[in-house]
Length: 384
Image (cartoon, rainbow, N blue to C red; front, side, top):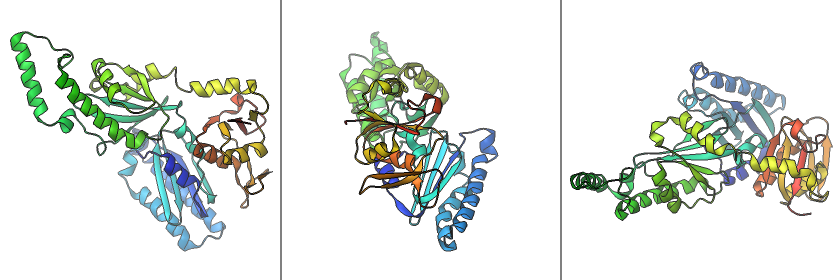
């Protein structure tokens, strides 16, 4: 699974070219749809439509072929389609290609313009709508990205040790076995697999967990989503001591994670996480009208300049809603238009990109739950 960092998001959202092609489609993790190659067939269909649209825009055939080459390689890669999450995002331009497999249920969509369309990626950057799950024992490390409705594994073998012996040395197992034998001979008790009073054992586990924490930092350093740990109870205090990630969730998913598969771990994690998911979003939606008129706005002419200037704390976008128009950054002038054209752009996409770049929160909200329902964008400002 490809994780989208803040830096990569900024690179994509600030890229300009003629043309930039953005494609989003739903994918499946397994089952009949994977066997029937449903997503693979759907991408082929979307790309065929995209080629026709590019031809109608009088894009040279050579450039269309260049844009489509990496897309076609994906279509032809049978192995790629066996390892999907819930959605696939593709960005292709001259000299540029990126793809991301993410736990977001995209609707099939294509967008051709002078910039990439990043708005569907908004849930990836909502810390209270998704979470990370680390399942760890002394013999295994598994890492997942999840939402309320989905979970997908992230490969971390190249970032973290896969078992304790990889970090502290293979003499650990021999020493550990001798310790247990000696304890059984003398009648002394062990607790949950290691002597709670044995500092050496704890220190070695602590070194193991610090190595895991260091590796995960490569993924989590810019993240806001909570990290939930699934491990045996006695290990969690040691992991908390090793942890450097500021959004570590304070409750552990109890039990031995080796006793559950990925879906079982997801269900257990939701048991402790669900009350906290989307908590901040709900609170901000409920309190929108309690702010003074200077602190909020539903006017596109106010919101777009504020997004560029880093003044927006929270942006609500109507899901499936769109606002077309243009923005002149020099004079801060916003022009809206009824229909999409070759000369305008998605202002909701523009606003979402800038707010995320500047550290604000962006949420896709169904029409019925928008604070100001007559507008496609609602914003809470950081300052007036």
